[in-house]
Every structure is written in C-alpha cells, then in structure tokens.
Image (tube, rainbow over all chains, first blue to last red; front, side, top):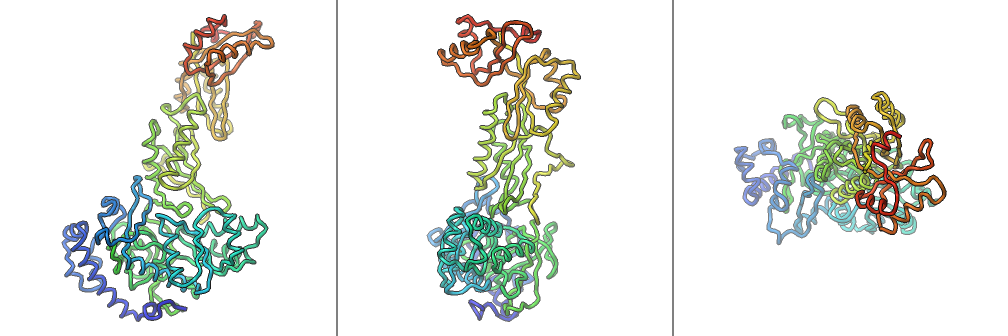
Length: 433
Length: 143
C-alpha cells in the first residue's frame, strides 16, 4: 500500500531531476535570506549558479549542530517569524537547545511524510494509533500525531509516562498501532504482564519504533512479546522530526528516505569526502523543500549506508541501512539525546566539583538507566553525610532539569575512575547491542 | 578544648575499610575512637587518633580523600541517665547535634561522648557552664 502513489514510485530519473530543481531553488533561497549561509558559501567560494548537477551538491559546505547553537535561537530561519507556525527544540550541549521552526507548508509536508511512513509501516484509515512519543518541544509526539490525523486514523495522544494507564487504554480502546521508543514497548509489555494482561492477545498489529538505536535481536524480542510487526522509523528535529525515513512492512529491511524532499549523502566522517553508494559512513542530509529552516548538508552523525537496490514494496526511494552508531559521542537515553559534555558543563558549574566523572549507561527491565559517577575531592568532602547528599541531589536535579533525563548520582573515591592515555573513558555503555 | 577528628571517604566496596586501618596502622598510628556513617553508596569513617596530622598525610598519600574537623569530647558518668543529662542541657540551650558517638574509658567510671556541633565554641561554653567536663585533644589521644 502507498499513500502517495505518484511520488513514492517516481522513476529514478524523475526523482533526480526533481531533486536538482529543488536543490537549486533552496540554495538560491538560503543564499538570499540567511546571512549564515551567505557567509558560508562565500568562504567556500561557491555560488548558487554553480549548482548545475546533483554532484555539485558536494561543493557546498556542511552544516553542523554547532552552527545551529552559534546562531541560537532563530539565526538559521529563512523566513520571518510571522511565517513560522511551530517551534520545536532539542536539548543542547551547554544548556541552550537547538531550535527549529516550521512554516504552515512545512507542517503539511511533515504530515504528508509521516502519513506516507504510517502507510509504509502497514497502518491505514481505521487504525487506532496509540502515540506514546512525548508531546512538547520534542518532535516525536506532534510529528507522529499530525501524520496519523492526515492518514485519517484515530489518534490517541497519550504521550509518555503513566505506564499502567497506557496498558489499560491500549486494551480498552483497542489500539492497533503503537508508536514509541523500542525499549518502551518492552517496558509496556512487562507492565501489562504485571497487570495480568497478555499484550499478545490485544488488537495491536504494528509498532513503529524510533528515537533510539535498536537491533535485529531486539526487533525479534518485541515482535514475539507483543505479537506485532515492529517497524524502524528514523528522524531528527534538525531535518524534520520523525518521518525522515521508514522501513516498509513488505521488506523490513532498510529505511526509505523521502527523496523528493531530502537528499541523503554518505561521507567519511574524518575527511568529509563523499563515499561511493553502498559504503558505510556518516549520513548527511539536505532538505530541499523546507521553508522555515532549510538545512544544507546537515551532518547527522549517524552511521549508515545507502541501499540503492529496488525494493519489493515498489517504492523507488533509496533506503538507509539500520543506524549502526554515531560518529560523535552522543548517547541516546530513553529517547533523549545526551552528550557527555552536557553533563560535564553541569558538573563544573557546581562549586568544588571537578569534571572527573564517568557515565554508566545500562538497561534494567528494558529501560535505559544512567548513573553518573563523580569523584569526591577535598573541596566537596565533608564529615557529614547530609552535605554529600546535598551535592549528589543537586547534580541529579540539574541533569534532570537541563537534559530531561533521570539519573542516579554516585559519589566515588578520587582516581577510582579509569584514566586512559590522556583521554578519559567517559562512558561505559552496558546496554545490549 | 576541641579535639581533632579526621574523616575519610570510603566507597562501599569490600576491603576498603581494611585498607584504611592497614595504612594508618603501618604508619604507627593508634585509633582512640571511631564511628562509621554509611549510606547505600558510600561511607564516612571518622577517627580520633593519637597522631592526627601524620594519619591524614599517610592516608592522602594513599589516595584517600581526608579532611580534618574539630569535635567536642565530653565526659559523662558511666551510669543510667549519664548521656541524657548532657543532651538535656544541649536541648535547653537549643544546640543542635550534627552527630555523636561514644566510648567508655578503659578503667575509669566515665564514658566519653564525641559531639559534632555546627558551633563547637558555643556548645563548649554551655556545657562547661553546666558543670560538664570537656576533655582536651591531648587527653583523648592519650587515653
């Protein structure tokens, strides 16, 4: 089944000529309206007129997450604020979030691409979509919501949290499609079992899971414990939000990226050079229809490769292999992006605390856990227990406030954290791959 | 009239306490009194020893986090209501005890209570005025 028969099955040449036309338009537009891009193009000695073929894309400079921070909050917007109808944001490394804005047409495009994604995952009108992605600044909740409404399905905007109530509603309302992080689906299944409910007996048919990396082994576990088809979805707020790419239910192999709205490239993360199709590297995406905040060659830091072979589902859009890692040190904890440097900047702001820390990420009962180990030095040490507990409590609260992740803070003896060749091992990730 | 106490941060790992006692024991330091505060993650060992500064420096050399604080040692009769008499004096004077621990003198009739106060000078003044004997650091070290 397809949502948009014409565009989802465009012949290769038609996709590419559409991409070129739209790329030329967006490059001209940002060069005229966004001083940041104007300056970057000038430095790279490239002008919009030089983009004559799709291969010319590689002449354009990359855009990094840091560039968004440097232009916080609205510096990369390509339209005046009175044309922006929605603003989303993700947490940033120094407490400042990365901000994105959508015009009315951007919201419609997003809904269109999410509707295509739902259909690719096997959902249709008449489905009851239990949307457990968080609603708010995070793009997951509202992104999936608008797509589900566009599809004409019945959306339950349950958002995250309150797991017991989720289980009750899923059972009583007859939810057929579940959208959440993959780990949360297993957590839901366990909560259901505790309530004496077997998720396999519910009406649930499909789960659309994203916002954190997961494996084929985890897919098998989810499919078996929930008796559903588990579909991988990819997205990031800088590009759109959820709906950048999705697996089709026919193949469940690779995520179609909507090439009439985005151009994917795979680069060597060390040199920035574009790799031949099929080789593994960092995914770079250029948005070619977005109005609010167009992204030229945005470095996603996600590691994948392109699968150019035709897909059995009939879609002609290229597929991305399942994300296999990151080219930076970003962690995804319960769907929240966390950089070790964010934790570090919180620690150094607390009087006496030194940035000797280690993050232990683990998974307990299918939920990610974060423990921050902080070394106790003489400046914060006290003979009174309560003084130390105030410090660990404060660290935990600031991490929760700034990053939105609950963590456990453990004070440890100095120098007990491994220091290796000049570069401390900041993260120990014990989650099953 | 205050007594020096050292405190040591100890992670909840087996053998850590024994490492402390080994380090200071081999340095010829004798422990006079101790208390251990424990939480689920860590402990704070508080010691009164005969050679405070020496103990502190050898522990630091061995990588422990150590600090030195002043506590108050009060002598009370080793009999029922002995401790209570001190606590009611402190209570009437609205002096808060952060923590305390006690030991009994080797051959005397008295017990020694070690108190940690926010304001030790004020506490010493109140206790002395009420007839309580405050022991010097030297006295406690040589017990």
